[in-house]
Image 1 (cartoon, rainbow, N blue to C red):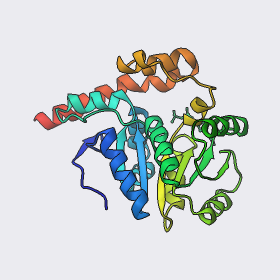
Image 2 (image 1 turned 135 degrees about the horizontal axis):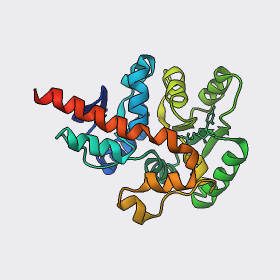
Image 3 (image 1 turned 180 degrees about the vertical axis):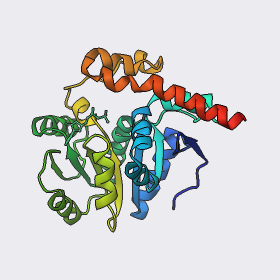
Image 4 (image 1 turned 90 degrees about the vertical axis):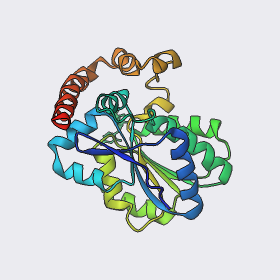
Length: 245
Ligand code: UDP
């Protein structure tokens, strides 16, 4: 059963007001009850993309829960005077889900990233979670999504982590998770981080909400993507202004 969390509308995307702990409680219950769940962890870039692409926005509307992956979303909720409690990131959720899965012997399917990245990530995951049941895996550069989806369905995994980046990962989940149980979550570049190809910001940077800056230093090619942030904040002010009128 999905608890009815209060929602806040940020530029047309409805984020659930929940903490990391509440999400994990919900997902633990879903695993026990063999529910299907579609989880999106969204950042400002995703919100802006959905504004421009109505078909993606309608896919996001089908998600069970949308959480704040980036600090920009939490800032947006504060500006709108309807604060989200905290960031609930795909990466943190993934790590905690793997621990739960190992403890409860729930199986996980890993889809996405380049072959060498995926293999390196799986090696590190097996070291950190030696008793984790791995239902299967496939890199994210496949020809036929249909046949990958068929393989996943045959394995009947309890958790499917889809690391194809947006919008591919949410589109894949929307199209192929119907009719199967399991927690399906898009996890973006998380396998690259687990593989050690991309470093996650040290805790200090995370706590001071500078993770985006750390990432930019590591991958300067992301600059054009990050320029979306000022635009996003201006649009939030626009939404706020309309609310005040
Ligand atoms: N990716 C993939 N197949 C594709 C496109 C991307 O598997 O067709 C992978 C890519 O290798 C990377 C992840 O998806 O591992 C996207 O990472 P990115 O950092 O862009 O995602 P973000 O965390 O920003 O959503």
